[in-house]
Structures are given as C-alpha cells and as structure tokens.
Image (cartoon, rainbow, N blue to C red; front, side, top):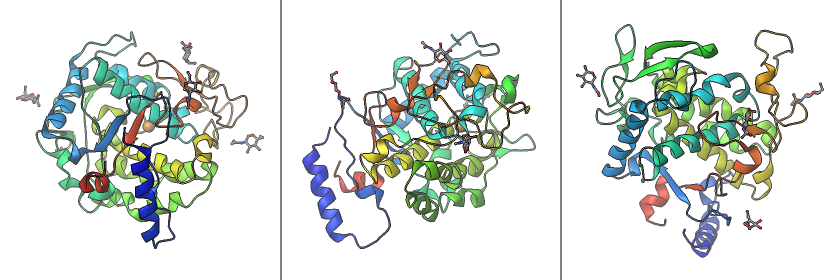
Length: 343
Ligand SMILES: *[C@@H]1O[C@H](CO)[C@@H](O)[C@H](O)[C@H]1NC(C)=O
Ligand SMILES: *[C@@H]1O[C@H](CO)[C@@H](O)[C@H](O)[C@H]1NC(C)=O
Ligand SMILES: *[C@@H]1O[C@H](CO)[C@@H](O)[C@H](O)[C@H]1NC(C)=O
Ligand SMILES: *[C@@H]1O[C@H](CO)[C@@H](O)[C@H](O)[C@H]1NC(C)=O
Ligand SMILES: [Cu+2]
C-alpha cells in the first residue's frame, strides 16, 4: 500500500493550487488506515495491461462455462448463480437506500468468484465513463477481443466479441427462458455520464438526499447507453459490461463518501422498500425478502443484511461502508494518478 505521507503531501500540494469551489474528489486522500492488509486495486479498463484484459475476459468466460452449484431452479452455470442475487432481490435493492451498498458487495461477489474459481490475479477494471462520455461506442471495451459491440438485427443480439454466444437464463420475476445478450447503443443516453451530473450529486451533503442522485443520471448512463440487457433492472448483470459500469458507480459513491471523511463512512439512510410501494400492492416485496433486512423500521440502517444468495456470505451495510475495510479491501485509482505515476 502507498504510504500515507505520499497521499498527504499530494493532498496539500493539490489544495494549494485548487481554485474551484466545487468538490474535487480526486484530491481527497484515498488511503484510510484499516485492517485490510493487501488492498486490491481497481483501475480504468484502459489501464489494465494487455495480459490483464485477456485474463479478465477469460475469467468471466470461465464462470460462463462452469456448471452451476447453487441448486437455483433454471441455473446452469456459475454465471447464472452470480446473477441470482440481483434477479431475486430486484425489488428490494433498487430505489432504496441499500441500492449502493448492495451493488458494492455485488462487485465483490463477482470478484471473489473470478479470483477463487477462475484464477484471476489481475487488478479489477472499472469503466471510466466520464473519460469516454463523448464517444461511448468508440470505447475500447466494445472491441472484438473484449466485450463486443452493439446488438444487430431485429433481435439486437450481440454478434461479435468474446461473449457473442453467451446464453442467459433469467428474466424478471424469477422466470427462466434462454436468451442472448442484447444491446442497443444510445450515445444520447450515455451523455448522462457528464461531469455536471457528478458535480450535482457531490454537492449533496447527506446520504438521505444523495443516494437518489447517484441512482439517477450517473447510474442510468451505462445502463441506457448500452441498452438491451443492460437496460433491464432485473437481468442487467447478464451482460459482462455490467460489472465495469457498477464498479464505476461505486467509485463515484466512494469519492462522495471521502468528501467528508470520516463522517460519511457511517452515513446510511433512505427507505428500505421503494417509496410509493404500498403494503398489499402487487409489487410490494414478499416477507421472504423483507424479513431479513434487520433495520427495525422502514429506514435503511447500517445493520441492514446484504444477501448474496449462495455466492458469498451475508454481510451488513456497516461491513462495506469503508471500501478500504476488510470486507471489500479495495481502492480506486484514477486515470490522472496512473498517468502521473503517483500511485
Ligand atoms: C483491527 O483489528 C483489531 C483486532 O482484530 C481490532 O481490535 C480493531 O478494531 C480493528 N480496526 C479496524 C479499523 O477495523
Ligand atoms: C460463437 O459460435 C459460432 C458458431 O458456433 C462460432 O463460429 C464462434 O466462434 C463463436 N464465438 C465465440 C466468441 O465463441
Ligand atoms: C417511515 O415511516 C414513517 C411513518 O409512516 C414515515 O413518516 C417516513 O417517511 C418513512 N420513512 C421512509 C424512509 O420511508
Ligand atoms: C443470509 O441471509 C439470508 C436472507 O435473509 C438468510 O436466509 C440466510 O440464513 C443468511 N445466512 C446466514 C448464514 O446467516
Ligand atoms: Cu442493479
């Protein structure tokens, strides 16, 4: 891990020359001392080495080829097993305070599987959406040797890239039916990744108000920009690009948390059932989902249980609030720092 002295020196140097009144997350110290001993790095996709890129794709393909071990009806592969926590809990992990925490631990669930079951040893990539906001379709991610490009024809199935033949199983409401990975690129929808939308969220002081901001435009950019499977609230993790998008969103939340350190390490709030969903209505979550929250009320708390079905053990929101803590034990590196060679 990089020394605290280096980070502090950087911070002081940066503050001295900072002219803007806007929050500047990249200038905030990144390393927070914890019991996490071998911190794992997350870098923009384009900063992975060629070997890491190939190994990362191979690791996802390994999960796609490996037989399911979960016993979930309809699951055939480990990729299906990994999708299940998101499929079966869609109504209680979106439009709620636990939205960002759930997706933070979900990134770790994916990382754990590719490292433990598929031998991935590289750094984890995120999609640096802001850097690519002017030309999403031109992203290196969509090249043939990686994630492939836009959907084609009336089916919108992807026809090139390393996941061209990926068959997904799960649809909404736990239904099972084989389908392909579809995409329908929209550069217009991707514009939501713009800096102004990030600034707007960073200017909000409490999680109670900030979580909805993050869940709107910065979140919609990757989903609606890629379109197809990615634009479905339930089965979007079927497209391997999902993990790079949500890791980026997680980075944005983490940067917001560090804007008021350490207070925001413990700032949790928001409804635990989507607002406007009334008890007794057809979309009200069943007791099988709500009974395990552990919130003792209708507000999301640090005590909230995050369930990754059989993929990795349950944790609470308290466990994942500190990205550098022992549960996630990761840090995000910015393109600018990597280019300057300061990390
Ligand atoms: C680190 O671990 C020690 C011993 O297990 C514990 O007492 C301490 O609270 C932990 N510190 C953090 C920051 O988690
Ligand atoms: C997909 O399947 C087709 C037909 O079997 C095959 O030619 C192609 O190489 C496969 N592509 C990938 C990326 O596996
Ligand atoms: C929780 O319920 C109370 C009482 O019905 C309500 O006033 C409050 O707005 C609710 N809070 C959330 C976060 O839904
Ligand atoms: C994890 O959470 C789920 C959902 O509440 C629960 O059914 C399961 O028993 C929990 N697992 C453990 C080991 O506590
Ligand atoms: Cu989601």
